[in-house]
Structure formats: C-alpha cells, structure tokens
Image 1 (cartoon, one colour):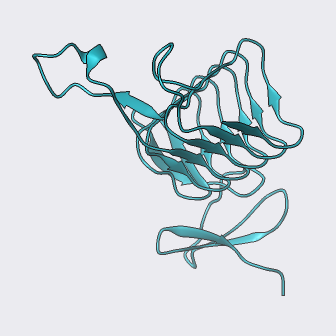
Image 2: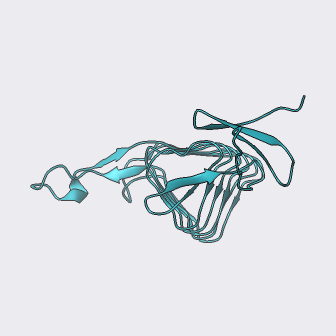
Length: 178
C-alpha cells in the first residue's frame, strides 16, 4: 500500500506507479514520512519497496525505480522475463535536486544532498554531497545543507549554525554542545 505522513505534498503530474506492468501484480509499497514532498513531474516506481523519510525535499522530475527488468535469456523477450526488486530508502532531511534518478537497492543517508541530474546507483553516506552520472561523493554537508570544509583535526563548523562536525572513519558526526 501507500502510506503518507503529515503534510506530505505531491507536485502536479507526479506519477506513483504501484506495479511493474500495467495490470501487473501490486508492488511492495511506498511510505513517505512527515513534511516531505515529491516534486512536479516526478516518477516513483514502487513495485519494489520505497521509503522516503521525514523532511525530504524532492525537486521536479526526480525518478525512483525500485525495480529493474531481468534480461538473462536471449531466447525470451525482456518484457516476459519479469523484474527484480530491491528497496530504495531515503533517510530524513535529504535534498534530492531536479532530474535525479535513484535506482533500486540504494539507501540515501540522513542529511545528504544529491546534486541536479545525478544518477544514484549505490548507497550514499549520511551528510554526503554527491554529483554526476554515475554519482560520486565530492564532499560533506551540514544539517543546513552547507558544504563542510574539514581542517587538519578533521573538524568543520557549519557557517549558518556554528555547529561543529567531525569526520572519522569516513563518517560525519555532529558534535553535541558541552
């Protein structure tokens, strides 16, 4: 089924398709957290499970595909070989910019920013900034979406909140106030 949290908005002409084929079996479902939005003209194919967290911003023309066509046999038409599904999980407070494509089996970590036009084929770490096709990580962002510049002590300060972040073992952690 489809579960929508509080104050979810779905833009004009967005498509949520609950099966892999018209008239096919109903998919695994879609869950959208509170205060999240799907931009105009976006597409969510949820024959595989898709979960969008709280406060997620999706710009226009974002596409999520939680399924992929099988094509193992050259003797059987691809459309008759079925699909393989894998969940898409988008954690809280992410920004998915315009024209992004997110493929099956991907988890996007909390607070991440996916730049416009990116094609996400593998997991994205929390607070990561990713760009390109296929997407690659080029930096880290704060909870406010500002690029973090780490010093030699592997700490950075958000220019808006003055909150300190630490980079350790390829993971960013917000340090709590003392």
